[in-house]
Amino acid sequence: MFDAAVIGAGVIGLTSALRLQRAGARVAMVTADPPGSTMSSVAAAVWYPTRTLAQARTLDWAKVTFDELARQAADGVPGVVMRRTRMLLRHEAATCPWWAAAVPDVRVLQAGEVRAPFTTGWAFTAPSVEMPLYLEWLQRCFTEAGGTLVRRRIDSLDQATAWAPVVVNATGLGAVALCRDAELRPVRGQLVLVTNPGLNTSVRVEDNTDGYTYVHPRSTDVVLGGTFEDDRWDTTPCEATARAILRRCTALLPELTDAQVIGHRVGLRPHRNSGVRLEVDPHARGGGRRLVHNYGHGGAGVTLAWGCADAATALALAAHG
Image (cartoon, rainbow, N blue to C red; front, side):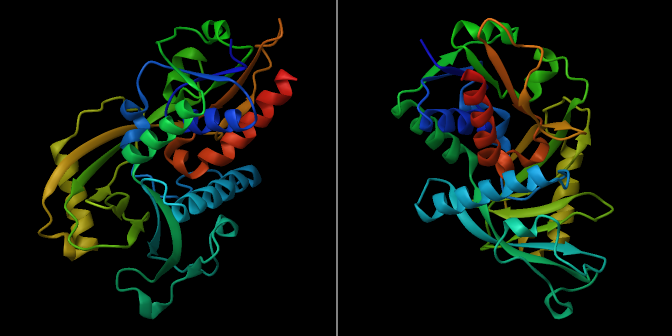
């Protein structure tokens, strides 16, 4: 009935499904939860290769995704805008970061552009994505192009072969159970949403000893973060953590002092120490059926999504052929 089945309806599954469709495949997307209820919907979702390995393939995926999101922003895709971004550093940055080739305007901040305790940093323009709007748009594109959304929880990837000869596994943390992947683990991230006092620039600080700090303005609010808590499955917001996030972000940008808290969010990033698993499963061949894995993007799902979708589609179609 279908040429390919994508398991998972987060940003990785949706982009993979759309790329398969564009290549001419009839696609079913199998998911236990609708796209708006996936972990992707919680993401702050500003393009940045957060805690990714400095590999050639990662840079390629990041650049493809940057270019695609920039095009979508120019086309007025819901939730996608290009936003000025600053990464502030407490140490000297003699050169631009390893991912600079993906970003047209990245440059090193000069001493007069930062204040203590920061000494330098990077300035660039990057795509910013409001995930609830974007996921809804992606799903609409998929269904309007003839895609079929199957609401079902599966216990084994073998079950997916009932829908198609080619399966793309985009289950994120679901691969812990489905693939018995010992490398895959959750990295908990907590966010605080506040009213926007007029901020337009995203600001990040990675080397704050009190915790990773970022401020990401959106159309109607500001996302404040955050945390990187290894091996924690708890998705209940912690009040003490929220207070710590507010303290760090307000110290960074005093304009947030009177901002009203309007929400709390917790998401679980699917992290793998060796990076994204994007390959044809060598143990799932036979009977004309193939399995392509596309999971383990950690906190860089939005940053790598379209590049990984292209790569997964190429593997899926090559395997199908």
